[in-house]
Image 1 (cartoon, helix red, strand yellow):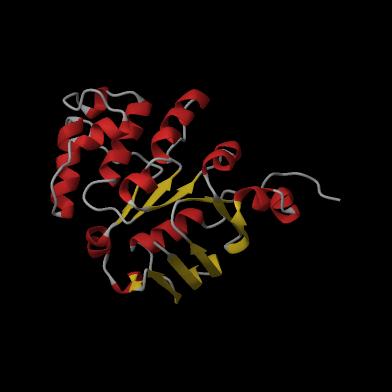
Image 2 (image 1 turned 90 degrees about the vertical axis):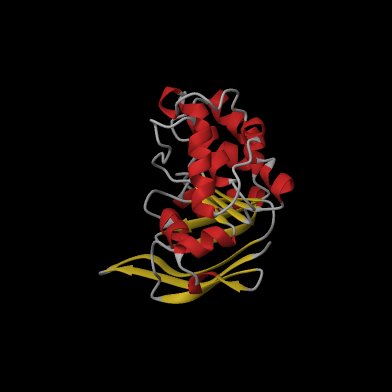
Length: 231
């Protein structure tokens, strides 16, 4: 799977959260990092169909994603999680999965619970721990045949140990589902551990992209994002 973003521009009045971003994500697990307000979630919103760009192209293995409404992108295979939890607390974990499956027009594969590390899908989602709810949200994002999975800070609020536990599942997704995973994450150490490639946005522009170790060593990234003084 290859996701190609070309000259993408978004404007909210005089604000330009994305300003001519050209970027390619190849198969595997890719990181997307940058300071708060850099345009990361806006990029996810454009890919999901919630924000319409003023210009640019987005293609995935030749398919024109911008030509599809949000529900057709989801049925095509575009999945995502959000910074704010989307689980329905009153429903069981199993029913949350069925709800996602109904929306996507496919079966609710109960095997996703085992893959994501959820032991008891009969429990109400509201009774789950934060880590368990994040596991459930990941399971919902993997219903059907996911081709591109966008994860927006899935480890937010988790302890270091919990983040690593969730990461163990996330890193297995590309091989298990033959899907491209793009991960927004502020934990740079985690990104360094799990992402083969990483892109950095800053003020709506692409600052750097490539192998993660190389990107994190870039002087511009260290100065703009990691807060280091580069001489």
